[in-house]
Image (cartoon, rainbow, N blue to C red):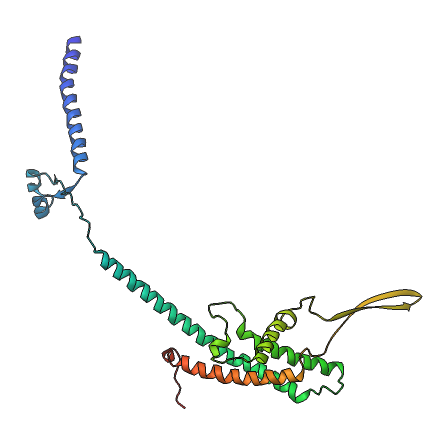
Length: 269
């Protein structure tokens, strides 16, 4: 019995070694085939048929190495490309700046027209030698505020890409009087009419003492200067300035608008 068992074990050892070697070869074959594999012509032509046993369904091949050579570009060609890109960028920037200037000029027409209307109302309705009730004085102050704020709007920086307007953009030259009034209007807008800077607000504080139900009361009340800050003579000069500005910006708008006429709808009159 012992001899039979020994004989059986001896017979099984060679077979186990064959199985291990076969498994090792298959694993090694798969690892090599993962590099680059293509289907054999027989397997492509006949698929899984009896011919597949004559040739391995996959054949290991080596792909050729491709070496990319650097492309030589002359220096002058690179400079030409850079200069062309800069020219295109500068041209686009100039066009965008011109269109922004046209936008500001067209918006300024409305601002100056509103300021001119307020100046006209003041010249028609205010008499410096007359006395008016507080409600009328405040109405005149409203006209003056509208005139100053509307006049200063085009010359001040706003949000967005559209920049402010300058007198140089209008093509006009200012006299000494006009330059002084221009600076005064911008200053009033920044300190009084567009803002309420404490050092520029004309305010008086009064303490009113009274007795109510045998109780002493002290009321601290402010009083403000309600009159106009500008004289009618100054308003008259401002009105003339506004008329010239309106004519100048309309002419400028027509001139600049002719360049960008394709961007706007056309109406037949």
